[in-house]
Length: 382
Ligand SMILES: C[S@@+](CC[C@H](N)C(=O)[O-])C[C@H]1O[C@@H](n2cnc3c(N)ncnc32)[C@H](O)[C@@H]1O
Image (cartoon, rainbow, N blue to C red; front, side, top):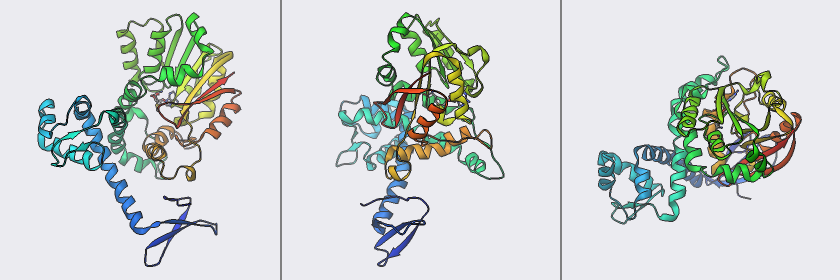
């Protein structure tokens, strides 16, 4: 089997005048045939180029260029795009050039007319939203370098680069806009009649409250508590609830690992999305969630559940994204204490299942997100 990428603690031995490389897994006599050195060089250059293209995409998104291309019914020149946005044409031309050579957008033979085919517009827009995570990653580069030093254990909480809350919000609003139906409610049909008649729901790690506000506006007889350890995003959550006139949702600042006694056996349904792997002490949090549910209550843990670890995900773009973002976001977020779990989003579904069971839950359903094959909704019953 031809494999690409590194596996484990490996070394390269160059054979036949560097025409091919053989990779050895440390401690194992088994060798895996690897690609030729020229292929390897090409791949490295592609990764290098792709990282720049994605940074340009994030710029295009934030400058409004993505929206213009999505709305355009016919190809546009860089001047036309620049004029619509009051931008300098020279910058726009370079951004479009980067996206075109990266085959993110199309260009005509004269290299002057740019467009995105209709059937690509959804993906183009979605990935442009994700690309916005790159600038905050860059901002954290020096701090992560510091945090990685043995002499300097510690982490970087999301609030230190608050732009990340906007990116998370945009992912839920633009990329995962239907997730309440496709990823959440569809996995817990048993909750629907209960939500209609009126139950108590909590979402921990709710950030800007997109999920809580949407649920609260849909199920007016139920009450919702949105909670997060960071207070900054909750300002937006409350403001949005107010703008929508929602009376059945409140927000508080809370550490999920030490939930107040007053929440004991209080909720019928608790949700977390993309939270548990980020925590300092995730098992503690799961135990606390268990404690806060009424007997028979449901916990919806929506989280990244990458199966296969490193070797099972070689050259998988989605896994590359998660491993890379994790270094700059999830691991520092978790590393608030020297003995942090620091699971990261690549913790894997098997460990997630083990920890859920350890907290006392029974998993009654598992479903994969429609928008992200790595995201799993574990439906857990107390
Ligand atoms: C990756 S974000 C996900 C936000 C949101 N649930 C979403 O789906 O976009 C993780 C969230 O968990 C919050 N968080 C991290 N540690 C926490 C803790 N100990 N208690 C409560 N919330 C925490 C962070 O502040 C952040 O808002």
